[in-house]
Structure formats: structure tokens, C-alpha cells
Length: 306
Image 1 (cartoon, helix red, strand yellow):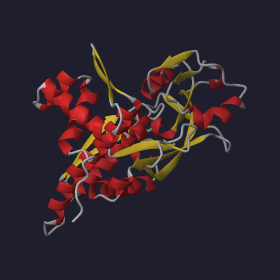
Image 2 (cartoon, one colour):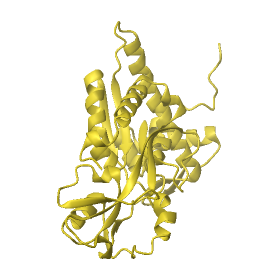
Image 3 (tube, rainbow, N blue to C red):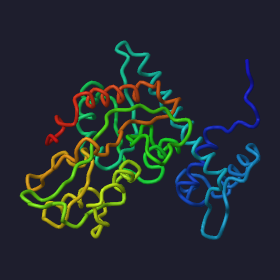
Image 4 (tube, rainbow, N blue to C red):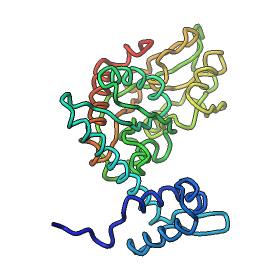
């Protein structure tokens, strides 16, 4: 029977690493875990000795992970999550009906959380009432939802794929659908292309950049909003025009007109990301089935058609 290596970290040591990273200090981590500050410090020193790296920079204002610490904490979150999933899956497999149950952590960018997930989760809960979805909205910037998965904060991320920002390595991905961008403006506007441009930081420049550069009629944005909902509100009141992806336009009010940009219009690919170890779990497979089922029906059933 294989022996446990002295360098292996025990679950309680992993929990201490995560708590220090999440709370920003040894004392705060101790309070969260019901331990003394000295017990947390001792545990962290032991983990650093086993791993052969300094994991946290200590200071008067608390503790922050080093580069090695960030990697260790990400793995710690993922291992602890697997322990939780193992318990739920074993209990489910032991039942005659092979019940799928337990928490399911989902990270999604705003338009996916608002327009895609409600239908998906409704179907998921109808088939598997024991699943407990927990959804976090993450800005579609930088590492985005894929970074949440890689760092162990989410089991599945609804993400934009094939953009200029590469996904963290080692993740499992699957495409769901490709959505077009359209010109959006207040209904009844005779010359919408003469309006000022309204934009927001998450407008997926990696998908539109080349197309955008070739359009001499699009001015520099003069109005910038916090998110696509604010953009749509500004556009609907005649404050400008916008170029927006289809998910952001589901349920758009009648005061907004959506104009096709033609055969050369930009598109973006939406899919899911998860980790190799979670991809085969019952809760993740159940969600992926519902995502694919909903995506196969197209965007029109989710709201106002394009």
C-alpha cells in the first residue's frame, strides 16, 4: 500500500492557505477557521517547508501570496473542491436512482448570466433538484471567467473563446454557439451611423478589432458606460449608436432598432471552460448537457429575435 509522502499537504493545511489568501492575513484567517494566529503561522511555515517555496509575503498590513503562493492557493482550492465533489458523488452513486446533487459554482460574464443561464438553470433544476447552482458574474476582461476556473473559484466558466487573450493552460473547453455583432440605435433614426459611439470596456475588442479598424464610419467612442445594459439604455434614448453582440440584445426594448452589419460582420464564440478533473463529474456534465441543449435551440427562443 503506497505511503503518504511527508511533502504532501493535508486538507487542513490547504484550507489554511486558502483562508490566508482570501482574508489577507494570518489573524483574519485564524478567526475564519477558528484557529489562533500562531497556529495559522505554524501551518503556513510547514506548507512552505514541504513545498520548498515562500508562499506569502508577510507585512504589517497582512499577508499576500507570492507568485508561488498564488499557484499553491489555486491548486489548494481545486483539491478541496474535489474532496467536496467526491463526497457528493459517492453519496449519489450509492442511491438506487444515482442522484446528482451538491453545489455547482458557475462564473459567467454579465450577458450570459442574464440572458443564457436562467433558461439553462431552470432546466437543470427540473431534472436535478439536488444541484445547488451558485452563479458569480465576472467581467469579461483579462483572464475573465476562465481565470476563476483555473484559480479554483468556479467549477465551470461561461467564457468567450478564441479571443486575443489566451485561456489559462490546462483547461477543458467546449464551444456552444457563435453570436453576431449588430449595429444598435434608437428606433426610427434616419441616419444612425452619424450618431456618436457608445461603448463599454468589455466589448470584446479581440473579436471586433480588425473589423472595427476597417470601418471608416465608426468614430472614437465619446460615451463610455459601465456595462452593456447601460449602453443599451443610453442608445434607446438616442444618446448614440453601439455595436453589440447578440447576447447583449436579447430582450432589447422596442425603442431600440437592431441593424444587421452584413456578411463581414464580426462574431464571437461563446463556450464553457472547466478543469480536467471536474469535467467528468456528474454536476458539471449535467450543466454542460443543458448548456448544449439550450445553445442548440439558438438565441431567438431566449428573447427578442435578431
